[in-house]
Image (cartoon, rainbow, N blue to C red; front, side, top):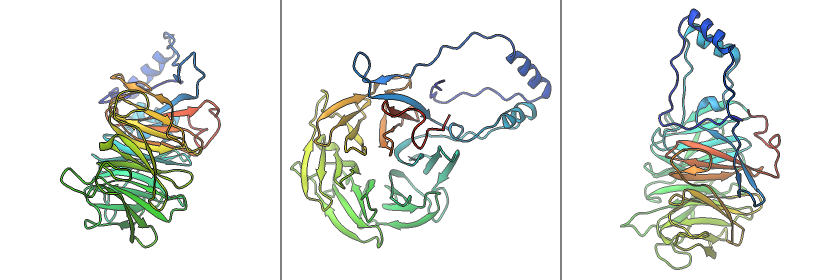
Length: 368
């Protein structure tokens, strides 16, 4: 496996623009070159502990998923044709379903689709009527529709899986700073985190009916008590429809029943394992384990369904190598247990695979 380092900006060699130069390049390729050192993907936890996850790959640009044949490559070198490179600038949140990886980019004002099985790369939300202003949170319904929170437009934009705009939910009277979305497992309820602000009391979760777009419930208010929030930022729905909300200003995760009844919370402020310094992204896996990004730690911590710490993956680092993060933000876990982590600084998505899952299993198995 070759690992491609996420340089900022990523440098590319000037294309060979004459047939003669292309011929010289091919002849040079036939000469003996020093063998590259094999990249050994890191495992977590590291030895001597028994590993549970292994780094699998990084997604950066359209050519990480789009098929690029040898014929196209030869044409590029021989005739001077260029391959249009598109990629992430400031990714924020991520949602994955059956190998389709959707990522919001708040600077480019679009959602990018890395369709791994389909070998496609799409931009969603760049055109009216579904044009995005500042997309942040994202989730996917059971039927494949994608829901995107637009924090500037104060509404939720809904598209089908190929990016066709369907409708908008919410308005400025119902939402102040919608920063994330999550859907119930049957797709009937849409949960929206309203982060509010320093001068606002609207720190809450708004619940909408996805069929009608009607606001049907509000969960929480500003405060420090159980069931209250201080700058909630992201949320997710678990396998049993429990709602998990990152209460960032209170340095904890709060857990609710689907109807909004408070269950319990976990986490305190601190720098020890199981504590939080700047919690942000959150996801659950098919077993109900909870994954929480901490931007200050440069990692994500994994908790069991009761909120007890199991392990962590990653740490702060300036190399951009696997497991090294400066501004991790969003996280998701797919149906096969693969973990997808967004880092805003390195403009990348790192993918981790459970060691119990072989590389040739799952929706992204045939990706190379």
